[in-house]
Image (spheres, rainbow over the protein chains, first blue to last red):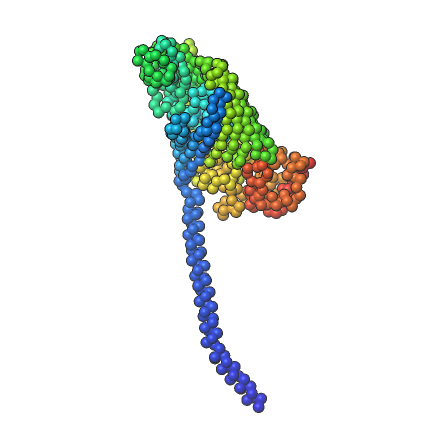
Length: 411
Length: 204
């Protein structure tokens, strides 16, 4: 009885297993297929991700880099004796095209809107920078003048803590703006002290002359804006040497020397031309005059405070022959600026004093400027500046106080 | 007479210029960066960044640009600020390692050496000093003054450890401190040690 019962149970189990096996196999196959589908999907995702990662890595450090930086600003200026106007300071994109650490093309294009609504386009600078070694770079092309600090490094609106440039450091001032030529530039340590240098040879400046009676001519200005030809045939040499005795202090000295000649009669200075001399008349072959620039600058900063200053002097010699023969002239400018950022705030106060002397009294100016800045971000700044101007000639442009506001963005 | 003096001065200038070029070239012949991008030193780079950028303009935070953008920007600044090639490579290394929350595989070797059994003082000097300064008063505007009795150190340890670990932007500062000060290899032990050093050295 017992044996037959066991045999029945075994038969029943075998039959049950036989019946269940196809069902189990079917379920298992379905699960395997589902799992395989998931694996295939994951493999596809991994392949796609791998491809994306490879592409991303491919662009992480390419040999050739293209980059754009620059700055732009909008402003409102209200002179003491005139109506206020909105305006665009400039839109100045800077293009960088770099091949490894060997060469970089740099170019700043300046777009400005004039009072007449016309858009003016100017090449601020365009250089090919060849990084010859860790301590020397050869800069060739049109470059910002390395004489002094303001024109080459401080003038961009998001860097300059005031809306305006110090007197004598703008166009037609005492400080050269730019030049065309070749420059050696770099930095090197001397013991534990950092130094930097620049040395250049260039086409140099041209001179503007003015006259009231077409007999006596005076030098009206030194145009140092990077001329594309050396019309006076004499190259200008110059440079700057900077030293940092401590990390928070830089002291620099600058110079430039060469010859320059009058090439143009300043517009609107001949009231009744009688000998063919019109405003804007161009000259060639005028006598060469000596051109000498000396300068000194410093910057010191500590925590939230910075103090900087600069002195520049441009001397033009006399000429005894030629249509525009006459005496030379001296352009001299100096400024000092103190800035203080209130701790744990985005507010900054700025105080600047400047003095500019030039041939002809109309442009001589002493200026005290106060400014309040709000740093929305470190490269987006809202500025309010007030200039207290004291000109040698009362009522002249140089004697007019001004309120200036600006939004400046460096990108 | 004056013209003659000027002529002599200019000749002297030309000769000295040529001499400077030769001197500079020979001085640097063995240090030309043939490899690119050659890794610099993270710690030295943070010092270059803190000591040079603010001399002309407000400091720009590492997170403002991508790695490739920092390369071109640094070479542009090499020209403008008179940096050496080594300083340029160092500052690129610092900025590229500090502009992300996670460190790219290729850059871990650059910062790994900073976290090997360092003391709180060593961590401060290698990772924090660039922004917070040797005297703890902040190397440039926007960084807190540790010596201010009512300032950052008045906060409890757990808050400050959280700030150091995850990054923090001080009120009024346009730039945030990156997580772990930009050095992702700092351990919890390193962070505790550096906070202890900061409190002991600058706290009042």
